[in-house]
Image (cartoon, rainbow, N blue to C red; front, top):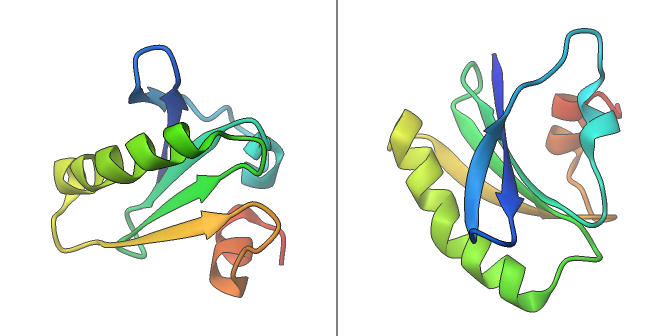
Length: 97
């Protein structure tokens, strides 16, 4: 099960986003957004940062991401992924591989 959060620049917080059925996760990637994917099965939290996001957005997201992780399970690992430099594991998660 994947839970998705999107950073809201106005409130400077992450909000949970409902994932619609039959929509591939890679279609949700947008270079203007910062997203957090909580992989409940893999026990991992991925913070994906779009290349058009500001340094301020990235900084605040970096501070907020551990709170999202802790909300689900403190033992989950937290990884940051940059737009265009995704790891193979992240690509598999979102369906790019």
